[in-house]
Length: 209
Length: 209
Image 1 (cartoon, rainbow over the protein chains, first blue to last red):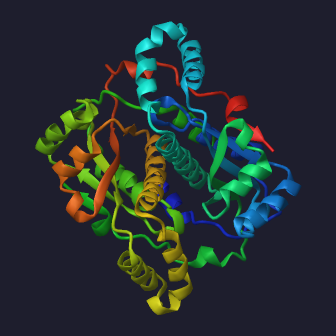
Image 2 (cartoon, one colour):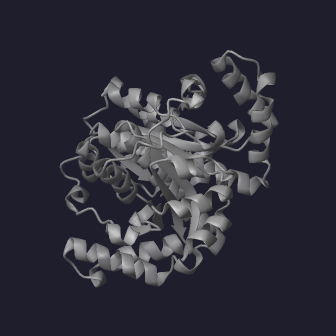
Image 3 (cartoon, one colour):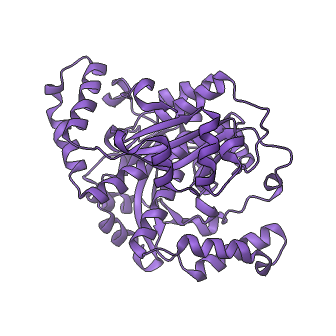
C-alpha cells in the first residue's frame, strides 16, 4: 500500500521527454480508461478528450503553448475539453445511455432527470465553470493512474485555449479546451526531476476539526 | 498494470458506509498524502483540507449536506477548501518554502516569482475559479489513490458551502469549502454498488486528431 505514496512522490511535472520511448498499448489504455472512468458530478461526464496523434498537428500546437517541448516530445498528448452544450438534449442523451446500462427505460429515471436538470440550471458562464472543475477530476485521476504505473506525465495549463480550439476544430463540436495532459517517459536530461518536490507540510495543509 | 483499470472499475460513489469499519492509520496516510502531494498550477497549492474528526461536528454538518448519510457514516470526512488569500504575501510564503527545499534563497527565485505573480494577477472571482479547479485535481488524485488501495470513497458536491464555511469557521482563515471527500468501506446494504457503472463509450469520449 505504501507504494502509492512512493509513486506519488516519484512523479513530477515532466518537462523533457525521451522522444524514443512510447507508451505501450496497455499503458495508453490505462491513461485513457482513467480519464473515461473518472467520476463527475451527477455522473454527467461533461467532457471529451482529444488524443492528438498527428505529429504535424502537434508541431502546430506547440507555439500556442509557449513553445513548451512536451507538446511535441511526449509520447502522447491529450487535450481535456469541457462540453459547452450542456442542455436538456444532452441530459436526455446521457439518460438513455444510463437506462440502457441499467436495462430500464429513460422514463423510469424521471427523478434522476429532474435532479440533472436542476444541476445544469445555472447561467452559462457558471455552468461552464462547474463543468470545467469536473474536467480537473479526470486530470487528477489520470495523473495518479500514470504515477501508479510509472508513466511520466505533465499537467499543463500554459497554453492558449482559443488557439487550441481553433487548430483542433473544437468550437463547432461544442467543446472548449481546458487543460493538457502529456504522458511518456522522462528524458535523463530533464533537470526538473532532480529538484526536490515542494509541498507544504502536513501541519500547514491539514486542519483538524 | 491492468489492476489499475480493474480498481477504477471497482470504485463507485459510495452512498452507505459500514460504520463499524474505519481506515487504518496507513490507509488514512495514503488518502492524506494523495491530497497533499497533488500537483497544482505553478505548484501553488491554493488549498487546505479540513479533516473533520469530531463526530458531533459531523452530525451538525449533515443537514447542510441534504442529510446525506456519508457525512456521518463514512470512516473519514475531508472538506476540500480553496484559499481565498492568494496575494503577494502568499506567493512569498510559498517561495520561501521552495527556497528552503532547494537549499537556496527566495531572491534567487525572482523569475519564478514574476511568473507566479502573473498567474494570480486576475480579477478575484476568476482567481478563485482558477484555484477551485486546482482543488479538483487533488480530489481526483485522492479518488484514484483510494481505488488503488480498495478504499471506498464519495466525491460530494451536494452541500451548502456557506453553511459548511460557517460551521467549520473557514471564512476568517481565508478558506472556502469547495467539495467533500468521504472515505471508508461500503456497507453490503448499499444498493448503489450493484448498479452498472455508466460511462460513455470510448468512441463518444475520445476524439482523435
